[in-house]
Length: 158
Image 1 (cartoon, rainbow, N blue to C red):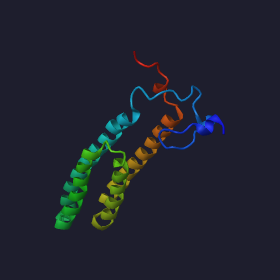
Image 2: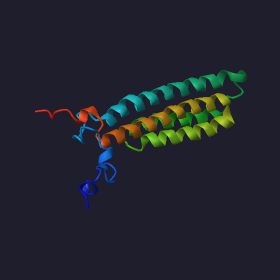
Image 3: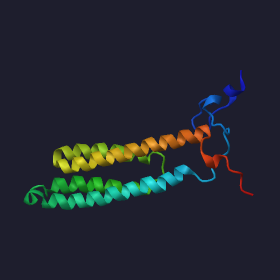
Image 4: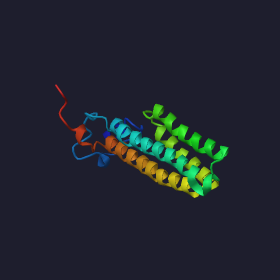
């Protein structure tokens, strides 16, 4: 058995192949946790933008077609979708939060089909945002796993 087969990945439990490791080696844990910064920067700001957009969408639905779309069902559905996003602020630091928010966009898109195309457009735009966030988070995790982050190679603080 070679030494690289004995090397186990800390994050995923997969064997680490030496060709996948960065040129400076694995290094140590990053000085600043990039996933914590990602959560604060991307997830919190994205949720804030979406909550503001949904509040404005409710107001727009009130004004469209002389208020014909302003029904109890519409208010309840869009209001529940808005409440879901507000509640997700409490769980933003959980690793599963991003996937749940993305799934919420699929539910929002389904609602948009039945309510109005503008709600569908909001859901699609934010689904693209959360899809990009999922992709970027996977890149950060993979770079951490392979030792490609600059902060993994800084000298340890005294």
